[in-house]
Length: 163
Ligand code: PNS
Image 1 (cartoon, rainbow, N blue to C red):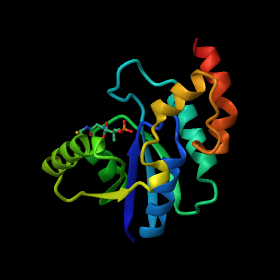
Image 2 (image 1 turned 30 degrees about the vertical axis):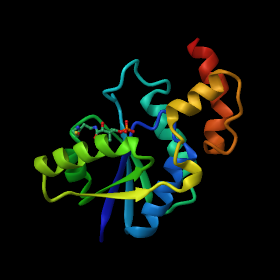
Image 3 (image 1 turned 180 degrees about the vertical axis):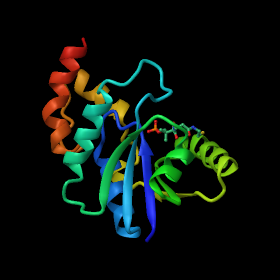
Image 4 (image 1 turned 45 degrees about the vertical axis):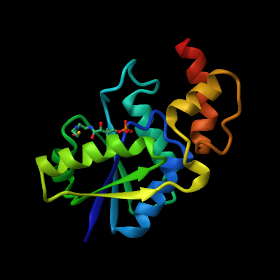
């Protein structure tokens, strides 16, 4: 039984994230999507931790070997807690590489029993990010197809509440 983690902030989950989760679910027996509850990112998340978890659960309802959990610890400690030995991450354009390379090296230094593996984003999602999605929606552009339907339905209302 091989269990892996797909970690992230997911503020909110995009179609690119979902593609990586679906492909990860096809590679390993079980996938736990790990939602960083208090991400070290400026400004704080738009969606609450509960909302981010619920949106991922809705988007992955068709995947029987995927579960979603929040975490507020080191990623390697979360991996240990859920019994995962692999961290799976999506890799987009070159700009991701340096940050991901650093995180993979540090995670290996913290716990060399947990292996990091990367799944290349498909060209369609290579330049997609949660921040780009929020920026497009904030300016009234359509994000249809760029995010799962559950996110598409709530994003405009969430952005208007945050104004
Ligand atoms: O979606 P993101 O923001 O790129 O995800 C980053 C995340 C949550 C995977 C990363 O910040 C993380 O692993 N946070 C947990 C804290 C930790 O373990 N930090 C040490 C690794 S450098």
